[in-house]
Image (tube, rainbow, N blue to C red; front, side, top):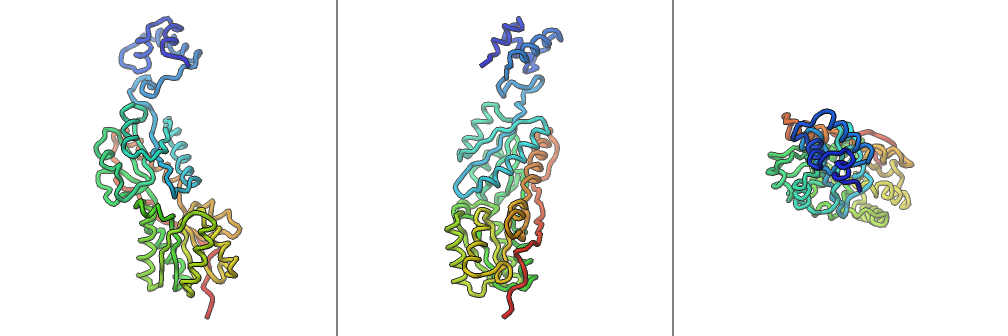
Length: 336
């Protein structure tokens, strides 16, 4: 690994002069700066994050805190990560991915080491233990998701309560009177993850408002669990004709399970989902769904963070409206 002393030797200057050229803390003659920059290029030197900017103390790195906990659907989560990475590069920033469930300790360690200028926080819980630190630390942050009390924080997300409501309203408009929500894995609700709780609240509120019979069932993210859930729903709710799924891995397995039981989708039972459009569109029978706009959310989060780094005013909450697209899995319920 090339060190700063190697650059200094190659450019025939002292290591402190190289450091000053990198940090911009002291003026360096144009000739000396050019020699140093040539040496950096020739040797392939990569300064550590805390000294990488030539004229600023910033690292030009954003920390993306994305704990890979049980019950998280990694493919969708990585769509968020990819959108954050792409947007950050457009602002000439890199992204440091923090995937361990370290909570505030991991964030503080990265902040104190000057490895990241600011943070994007994912998998936000209603009573998230990271929030007191984020409210008081000297580095800005943006949440993808909302806690129960967002005061003093900046967040962006889909309106998940509205997403649950939109699915119920669509089914009710077709004439369905008994509906069920097959939700996220149980541990996601136990953690108090905001998006899962809000979908359930929106679903239940809309069903009550429209006079529909309804039930909510968390479900593990396996095909076997999907089959067991389909059997349970039919057994416990004989009049069931509409299902909302908020659990990407089991959406198609649940449809397959209904089909294996002799129920036609959508002739006998209609299915809606809350998921990225790519998932809904690439199934054998395109699924009616509320889109999960991962690219837009990630881009908005980075934009808000860039504004905060520039000391610009930003809104505390940015809520994206739910957008339902009717496809092939919903239809009026069977007569009789």
